[in-house]
Length: 246
Ligand code: IPE
Ligand code: IPE
Ligand code: MG
Image (cartoon, rainbow, N blue to C red):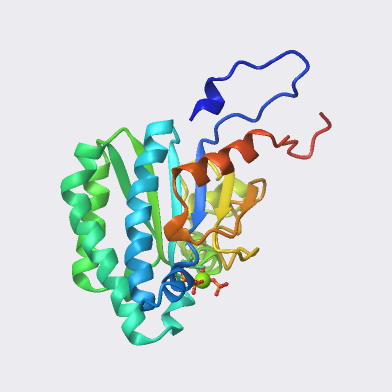
């Protein structure tokens, strides 16, 4: 990533620098496959392969947190064979992660409601979480059976239980944060959506309050290191004000 090694020249506006936290909506797998005359499931397999590559690249350029949207709470309404293929990909990825996380210095965390997933996947999620504890490299949050509204409802339910038990009586922004999957990490600085759609599709609605957005037409399986560099370059040119005057 040459951009961040470049010295600032006189008169050049302040650069935003490298984001600490990137979030990606991995969209366009189905259309990628269709364009090649392949079944949609082949697109998901290619998308998963690309995710592995991009996660390693993020680690290498010094991104601290990468959050990826892999399966939404709404994606259950797709055909069974497609949903089952995606569940199979998640299981494979988690199994592989058991062995690779330490070697690759990548911490894998799960963001989402595990209740609807198989006992085997739930067990793998727990194990990945345990192994992650002593890994220091890039943290990769896999959002699966994730919906931002579901995340907020679950947070409110947990909070209501705390109030009932007499452990809480006031609610602040920090409290809301505490009950979200992302409780321990900073908000995303940059949200990337490949695949041509310009919407959030129920992704990180609370956390993206001050995120920068980057949309592009490339389908996710083709979104390679050079495409990520383009997004990082666009981000570095943004001026973030957070409501202040600069
Ligand atoms: C993203 O790709 C993966 C999931 C939503 C699970 P899509 O499957 O949505 O691909 P398109 O948008 O149909 O091309
Ligand atoms: C968003 O993509 C969810 C994921 C990428 C996992 P979708 O393809 O489900 O979004 P919509 O339906 O086009 O909004
Ligand atoms: Mg899609």
